[in-house]
Image 1: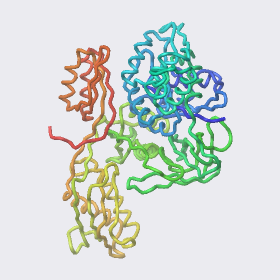
Image 2: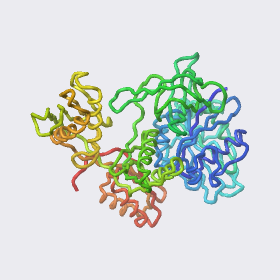
Image 3: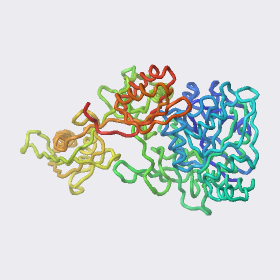
Image 4: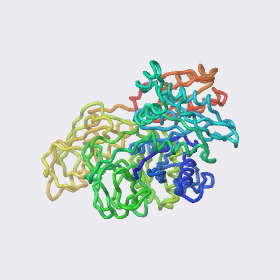
Length: 621
C-alpha cells in the first residue's frame, strides 16, 4: 500500500467539495453523499463552512483505490483564502484542477494553474457539471488551451452534453490528438510523429505517464461530481499517472511540514503534518522550527498527546498525513526537523479594520480571542488599539465575515467591525541615532540611560531589535522593557502608519540601583526612539494588487481608460473569442473604484479578480 496526497483546487463554486464527497462515497469511505446545500459534507465540517456553503480551511479525507491510499486535501476556492491553498500545495504529490463546464476558466483558475505550472506539480484537469444546461466542451477546451496552458490533452469525450443524460466515454489509446499533444513536450514522440514509425499506444501511454509526472502536460477528464459520471476514469488515471513522493527507506529523523492548524478547547491545537521522513508515534516528544522575523530559528517543542493518521491506524510514517495535538503554540508552516530554507512568503494583508466588542465588558476577551486566532494563522494579524479595540489586518470582506462568525460561535463574543481601509506602511529611509542619560543630564527625569539607532532592515523582516551593549550590562527586565516598547512605539510612525522592515539597535545603556525600574526604561524609550526616527526619516508605502479583468470587445477602450485614471500599470492585453483579458497592477486603494465602475462600463458582463502583490512607495498625486 502506498499513499498519494492529492489537492483538489478550483475557483469558488466549481464543485470541489462535491467531488470530494463523490470520491469518498464511491470508494466506501462514507456511507452517504453529503451536500454542500444541506451543509452535511465530510470536509466542510466547520459550522461557518456549512452555513456559508464554502470551504474556508484545508481539510483532509482518505479513500483507497486498489493498493493506493489517496489523501484528498480539499482547499478553499475564494480568493480571500488563496494563501491557505498555496500552503497546502507544499505537501502535495499532485493535484486535480476543477473547472465548471458552464462557467469555464475563471480568474482563480488561472492563478492556480500558474502556481501549479511553476511548481511543476503533476496536475489532472476535471471539467465538472457536464450535465448542467449551458455546459460546453470543444470551445471550453480551446479556452483552456488559450487561457490556462496549451499543454492539456483530453482523454474523454461527452455525449448528451448539457442534459441529465450526459455521459462520458474514453478516447481511443491511439488518439491522434494525444500523439500531437505529447509531441509538443516529448522529443521522442515528436521524432516518431515526424520521422516515423508512428508511436504505438504503449509509447503514448509511457510518455503520458512521464510527462504528467514532471508537470509538462495535463490530462483532461469530463464528468459530474453530483451525478458521478466520469469520476471512475479520473481516479483510475490519478493512481496510474501521479507518482507518490519517494519515501526514504529505513527510519531516519522525522521530517515534515505543518500545513493546517485547527483550534481546540483552551489553547489546544490540532496540527496537520505531512511527514517526509522517519516516523512519529503517540507520546513522542517533537521539536518544530520556524524562521523568526529577525532571521533566527524559533523552536516549539511538545509531546504528542493524540495522533490520528489519516486513513490508517498505527504510527505516522513517511509519505502520510497525521492530525496531532500536544505541542503548544504550533503554527502553519512549522517544520519538523531541520530548516532547509525560508518558508514561502505571502504578500501581507492590504486591508485593516478596527474591531470592538458590542458588550464593553468583553473588550479584553475580544482582544485575547483575536490574538489567539492571529497566533494560529500567521497571515491573520491583530494588534491592540485604544479603548479596548483591536486592529485586525485582512485580505478581504469575506474573511472579515468569517472572523466575525468565528468570534460568535467559538468565543461567544459579538463584535462590530469598522469599514475596512487600505493599510499603509512606513519604512526607515536612512539611519538615525539618539540617546538620553540620567536626569541630571537632561529634562526627562527617568532613572535610565538609553541610546538607540534606527536603520532600514531587509525587506520582509518586519521589526528586528538588537544590542551593541555588553550583555549583562542591564538586568533582563530592563532589556525586555526596552525591546517591547520599541516594537509597540513603531506601530505608529512619523506619518501615523505602522513602521516595518526596521532594525533598532541598543547602543548605550545604564541604570542606577536601586532607583531605576522597568517603568523608567518604558518611559524613556519612546522619547529616544522618536528622536532617532526623525533623524532617519521614513518613507510611506501603499499596497498594490495584481489584477485580471475580462471585458467585452467594445468595452476595451473605456475600461482601460478608467484603469489608467486609477493609476493602473498594464502587464498585457490579449484578445479572445468576444472578449479582451487585461492584466496589470493597481494601487489597492483604487480597487473599489474599479469594482464599482466595471458593471456600467461593460454592461454587466465584465469579470474582475485581484490579489495582494506587495507595496510601493506612495507617489504624489
